[in-house]
Length: 151
Image (tube, rainbow, N blue to C red):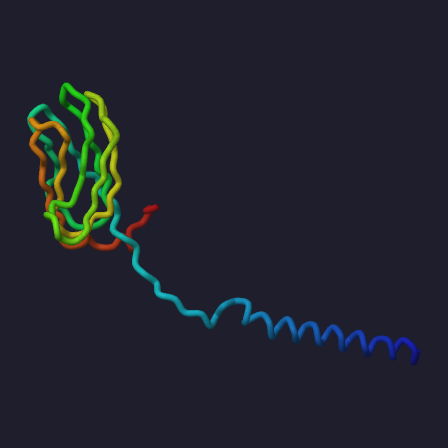
């Protein structure tokens, strides 16, 4: 009986040491001490539509708050056009954006995804006879933080 008792004591010590080591490493592995900034979500994207006619570019709505948008362009003219969205500021101003679609055929559509900052923008095509449209982007829209079923 004394032989089995001698073997059991070292085994118990080994198991106890392993449990204590695991308990000490557990909180360190969880990252409980790390802090981070919980930034709110951006505003939910909105759809803005534009139409190219033989005379002009039309957009609806013409003003909205800053944030992500999906710009859907429909070519209702008789020719193919490349549609350009750019900052309306002149030379020497702050750097802006410039995005151009591929050629949009008559009765065709294109899409641009843009994260707008407050300011003025211009929507145009290269044709001389088609007047551009202007849009005004106001203060940022509210966060979509508390909106359910958002991606």
